[in-house]
Image (cartoon, rainbow, N blue to C red; front, side, top):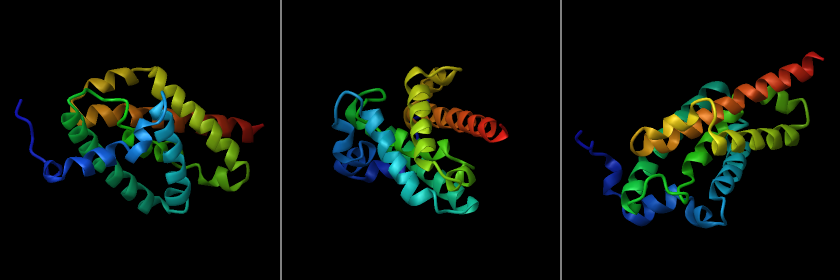
Length: 169
């Protein structure tokens, strides 16, 4: 299969690698994915939370596209399959975890919802149950990002069910 050419190949390696690793964050400790997820939670809180539905999904689509491009190119330049230092995938997947939860967050206890969501996301991202692990077999940036998006969707569904159950009581 012919490798498709992308605009990102023209960017200098420091730009590509620093974006994919969120600068030095991808090199912190033994669990850089957790660091990327924490950065993603801050990103969600500051940027996504105040947005309406349409801007939310436009920004989400744009960041997912960019993550696929940057992560795929970084993988090529590092000569490694999905290296741990690439954490842009976790970063962009965190806003998926909280889709549609603004009403619950505004009711109070946002900090608890954020912490529970963070924990559930890390569980799904690390353990990769319900077929999430198979998604990593896609080539390039898609394989790097899509499993995190699936973990984000599973987290979102879990949070909705949990919060629905708690408010129904």
